[in-house]
Image (tube, rainbow, N blue to C red):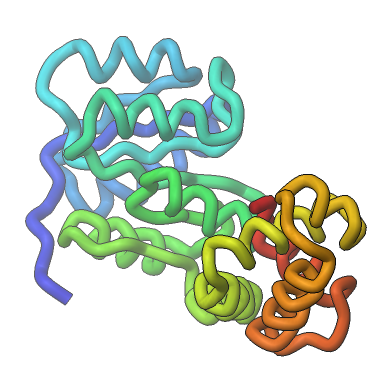
Length: 216
């Protein structure tokens, strides 16, 4: 990992003073010259960011008042595209971590981490890398979803359309009518879809498609 320069300024955004105090203490113990600013809600965070120079990193609570789920992250990512934003949360799961990173977070920091791991995570982000909790780095669910998406990507455009109709619960005769094709053609597409997705029934194909939110 590339060595990161110590941060000159950090913004902590959390509605719990105890959490802000804890993070402040950890940061100042390691970076005594760092300027720490705080905000208790999203509106205050925007005020702090508008006060002067951008911080080197922002620690953003997942459930911050004035925002909904990742809306604060998405807004800050839009307004300050070069600013590293690290989501902080007391409770999380694989889907939440994955969605946070997909929305532009530079890392996901559980509040349960010990002091040394928190500092290691922040230094990793400051060095330009993405921090993911150790237990989330191997994600079988994500690997399965990626494999499913690759199978779906192997379908032709027409087969994808037919799969979308299967997901919607349409019968072969309805698909034939909607797409203005013959029943024989529909059956051929369904057979090809089952083959490419490595399943034996249309129900299994729909289950796979639903796992990745495919709608056609």
